[in-house]
Length: 188
Image (cartoon, rainbow, N blue to C red; front, top):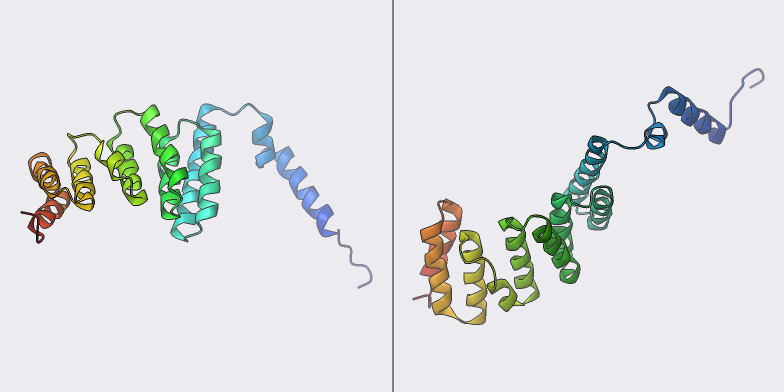
């Protein structure tokens, strides 16, 4: 068309980026300043949420990449380690899952979920001895350990752990699961 004027796409995109930079609304303007603790946390949370979205789509490699980025931004972000460990476990990459739970136990030594996830991962790996070496006073851990004892054929020890679950827990799902395991043939 004569009389019409259009910029090439590359030049158009460059101009848009410059406008965003000058206006202060683009990502480039944010990285030009020293990031605040809140902005780093917000970015880490955004990458972690992106990881959850990828996980929901079963795009496990992209989920891991998103968690890697969240951890790079905030190395003490335990939720990102936990989620990355779960993704590695879902991929059956046990050797890469376990260090994520180890890191959480270093950052938050009293986090029972990290120990439980690590124990589940050891069970998945077939390393029932490591799973058994967990905290003896947590109902979910006792349930997990009881399952590990079952797999090893140590029924008496499994029964003892499932019985301890009944004493320790008010979580009806955990108690119900323990009762069901106790009622299985050969449990008594």
